[in-house]
Image (cartoon, rainbow over all chains, first blue to last red; front, side, top):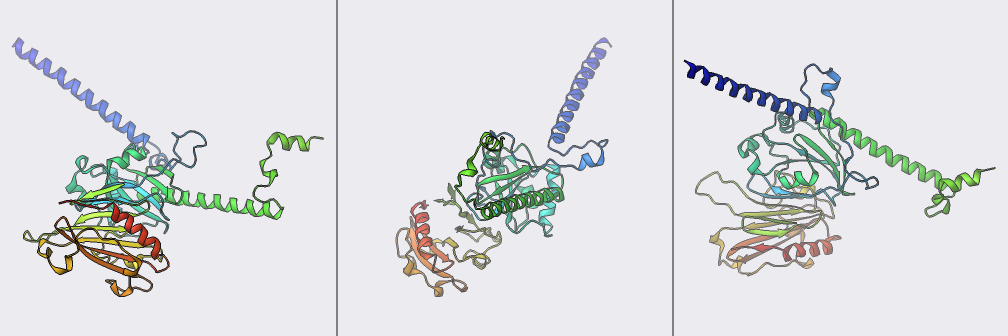
Length: 243
Length: 149
């Protein structure tokens, strides 16, 4: 009897440790999801729950390092026994890289949207390319079912590493002409990601319009490129206006 | 950046898109061989081996290249008598050599054998105005092409 009680106690202790480990692992997953903007907390306010992480400039670059970091071409294998090279840099269009996987639940909504055949509502100059990890890290049969026939899909862990992708789903918008990343981030639905892409496009257009307006105003005032007045420091301007 | 599959290896030029594939078969007795597609513009996923569904999207400055491998039954036939990877010249291009004639486009088809593998090289140029550059760039791709045994 004493032996039975002892065995039972050991089993209960082991199960307790196992359950505690599972709960801790679950909490860690939820925390990571929350960091990626896909928090599953049902008590969170609706607005917060729906809010994705913005397609933001990269924060790991030194100040003044340029736009948002360099973009990279996609090189990997396709789902039809093919080798794939998709240029992202040095092309006339922009590329929206959708980093998805065959196993992530949030990705399923994106796969379904892409396969639905509906208009994705992206600007004409944006090409959508799906990038998964290498086939050894994915389920090839699941990918074959999920991937739409008319969308470029490349399996390339090297591309994930090149863009520093933290997890899936994740989106990177790259400008082919400048070879720079315009923005990156994640979302829980295609509508959110599309909205952020359109916003980024609008912001870029506003920047260009502002630049053109300033150029026009300077030219109208007789200030042309290379004019010394464009290179005055704040101290020089202040000194000129000092009584 | 090199692209390698199905016994072919090539350097893809900056800004070019490339695929090395082999079509799926619907019959166990059927056998398919390597196909290379290269383009200076985004290629649709649904495309024919010789550019059906692709060349319609080309602009005047664009180029599309197919390298299509034939089966061993073609070995030794007069059409594939040329040994070694050929190079293209501007005078090889003509609108009449296109698989599908489209306004302004020019085509070039060359058949050859390399390492006992018979191929057709098919190049479409978007316009004669850009032909010198396209010829130069296609030859650079061919310089880096390796066809393994």
